[in-house]
Amino acid sequence: MTHAENKMDPFNIGLYAIEAVLVGVVIYAMAVLPALFKPMI
Image 1 (tube, rainbow, N blue to C red):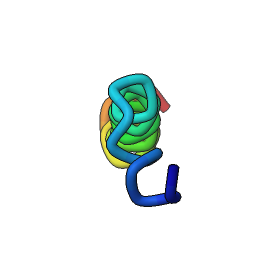
Image 2: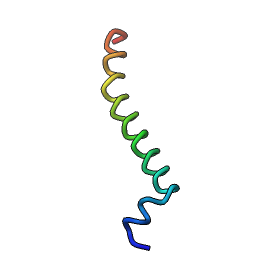
Image 3: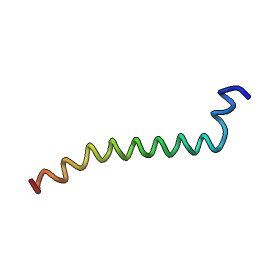
Image 4: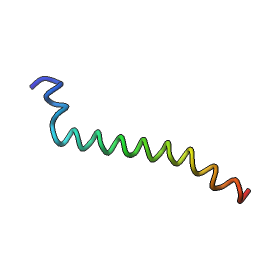
C-alpha cells in the first residue's frame, strides 16, 4: 500500500477532518475571544 492510498483510508480521513476542525476552532477562538473580552477589561 502506497502512502497516497493510505491517505485515502477512511480512518485517516476522519483524523484529518478532526485535525482541521481543531485548527479551525483554535484560530477562531484566537480571533473572537479577544473581541469578546475587550468590553469586560
